[in-house]
Amino acid sequence: MTSPLRSEADLIRALETGTYTVKDLYERAVAAGLADRPGGRTIIRDGQEQYKRRVRTALQDLRRRGRARRVTDQGAAAWLIEGSTTRTRRALFVLLPHDLSQLELVLGRAAQVLQQADEPIDLIVADPPWALGRGRPGSAYRRTYGRNHRQVVDGYVDVDPEAYADFTAEWVAAAGAALRPGGYLAVVTGAQQAARVQVAAEDVGGLTYVNSIVVPRAFGMYTTRRFVHSHHRVTVLTKGALESPQRVFERPAEMPRGRNGHIYATDVWADIPEERRVGLLRYDNALPTGLVSRVVRSTTREGDLVADPFNGSGTTAVVCLTERRRFYGGDVNPNSLRFTMARILAEVVPAMTTAAAVDVPRHMALAAYDPWAALLEEAVL
Image 1: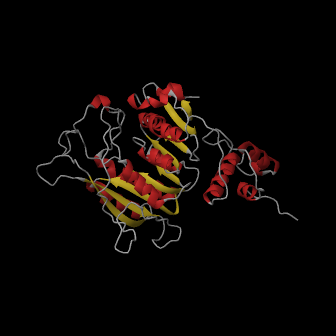
Image 2: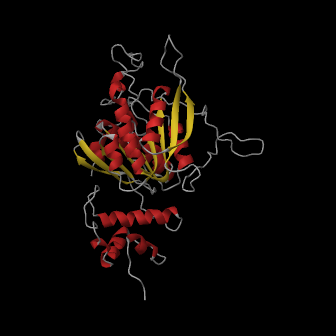
Image 3: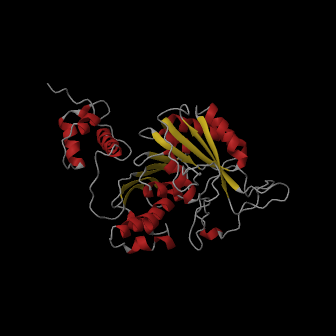
């Protein structure tokens, strides 16, 4: 006698070889009584019932194991947005052509974003405000960077230096709770705040130190009474013991090799190029794509869930879509979400569409020149 299905994962594993639509799977879940499990009919953030999310999660797990793949028609990117394009509450990425990734953006504080995650996270990449008092009278960093401020997206929210310890403890505790066992937290800071982040992650977040990675910068802010800070610091921590078999580590293929031909993965990344958006709208702070890409590729596998609670310019989101990771991110600045959506439509979708030999819609091809001012009006469904 066949035992009854106890979960959506059981349903997916019991499928015979064939092609199924997601709608078919939802109907099978209802017929098996799975939709009526506790919480199954609860409406979640994407506006659907919880049991449907469980079906999709089970499919993703099967795909990661190499036992399923998704067949999609060619098409353009689409967004569902709560609120308006001027006052976005939340935006859910629906489709990218020929890509299995999922992407979700939410508006909120970092701790709130992490606490709202629907499933354990494999990697959290964070570039929090550094609380340097930039632009404030009396601050050692009172001068702003030389730039055309008309080409900088507004709305960036800094942190009061006096409140930085509490701010760090709050979001780091949420990060520790949101990670899966063996998952990673990678925090990008200047040298000024790296120690505070590491101590908070170990003491409040319950995480284990893994590495401190140095990424040289070509242009640090000029100083006359101390050495110029000319590098990023990436503090990497994991949830659980270093020897845990649940911890993923893939040495990046592009790193140096020793005499025996083995990859010699060092903690100094001097080969990461800085990026300049000359003549284009840009965010107040933005990480180099190469830096984020190396962190993502070395600590996760395809299909894993990567989060960034300080979304900023959306670099982590762009990297995840390119590297076939799922992405969940947020920011307190609604312009961060809009800028990220525009970057994906301008940079990621055309590249995928070109690879698939599909014509690029005009608004996508031109998006790089006006990344968010009018683009979303065309992108909203």
